[in-house]
Image: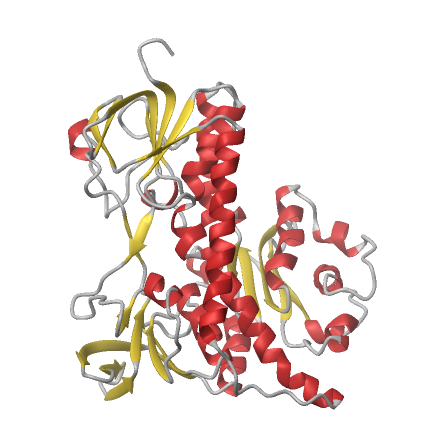
Length: 463
């Protein structure tokens, strides 16, 4: 566009930033993505991707004793965790290079630098270079939240980033926060033999998920020897020469001191909205988030915000979709405004996996939404027994009058994949009877989805 260097300038190359750049370029806009660190942001470099690589290695390691049942001798003493770490970095590095290649392929320029606003349509880099854009998208992401008294040193007190960069595992660890990140690290570390103590202020681990699904996971964790402290808060911490001591307090006020080699603090994230010059363009945050309208536009025309800096779930796939929506809006297309919060899937990659979307029972009660529920146990699907992963269930929450799907919850093997058949049904406005009558291959885990829908109709076969 005459008068501007770019049609679209994007601050940050995480899931929101790089997708916005690629989609804008695909739609014929001249786009540039500014990144101060590695392409791909937190998710790709120190989040989703390397953590899933570690989880894969952990599950391979956990499966080795099963070979003994076939008469194969397995010596687990030679574990070298640094090699596990190396594999996770290889996956992250490969995908970071892949994103850089895609930006180049679609002719979205990648600019290296630390960017901040110097005007409504102008970004200034740390080296003084100025770049202008007709539109600017803020996609600067988030960082681990710091709790006073539990500050990170990345040696004894780790953030999720520090935990991903460990090359040697501790013998004993305390994890503060039992959301998805805390639960996933509990799964990884305990798989490799670490004694894990998981502390959560709320009444259960994964407090935002379905209570019955969480019970299945909690039982599994207990069998594995994980120590869980729910309804418990950390009061203080003391670092020593060889480890850390954390004082925790339960709801009755009883205090306990936990000792470990290190402490992982994963109690939420903080938006990266400081230091980017928002004050120079008149944008104020609300509770740390940038307020946005239907198409993620800020109150300043031409400036948009996506991903972790706005008050939507801090998930990479949410940033992906918001990026696509803004790019299409800028290109004159007509994307649906805002994301439907009931159609955003959540996934926790532990064992068993937990996945969901839409209403939980407790949310429906809280919001006074009439609902009914139906579920089907994994053990009723033949494949789950055949592969020795019969723990779990599929649950659907639905409108008792119309049978519209209001939410779904899956706990068990491959739950993070299975959830999408249920979500597709909701998105396509299908009813439970449509899936109940659809032929599913046998034996598959997805038969549990079919049977849960038959349970809604009152005629499931295999239980």
